[in-house]
Length: 73
Image (cartoon, rainbow, N blue to C red; front, side, top):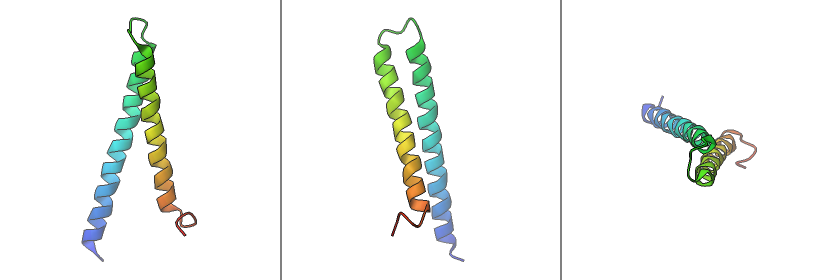
């Protein structure tokens, strides 16, 4: 077994999982900030939240693209 490749896959998995969780939680937090009645500019926070959710969705779709062999042929 090639241990270096296994460690690379484990590291990439860990990094991508952390990035996805941070993007999603940041999107949820920005959505909550935008819903606050005392917020000065809720549009900016809401658009940043949608940007975080979009980046999270793109990352998930890219992961599916990498996993499913039909798409990579």
